Image (tube, rainbow, N blue to C red):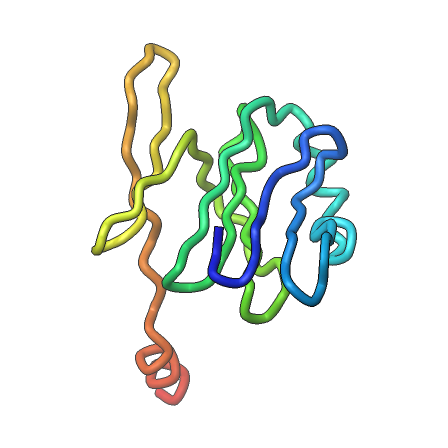
Length: 128
């Protein structure tokens, strides 16, 4: 999934796992203390996951019924966010990642992930 590791959702154990050179097979949800969040949303029949290369993040849709996703940042090796967005799939384009959501009538809605503030702008805003 990324240049450094393979990530997947283990349906049997309700865990997010990673296989990487040097660290072997790891249950990220257990090691990083978010297994309780995974158990809260154990209705996930068809989990969707994608990798955001720009920010080196793995994003996993938590639930089929609740619109929330959990984010793991590969650079700092930690879960960093929960987004109030659920999805059925993701499509990456040059200008961003678009999330697909199938509505109850079979229609598909498309949402774009909110763009993050570049570090230069974020530092500038904090100094003001």
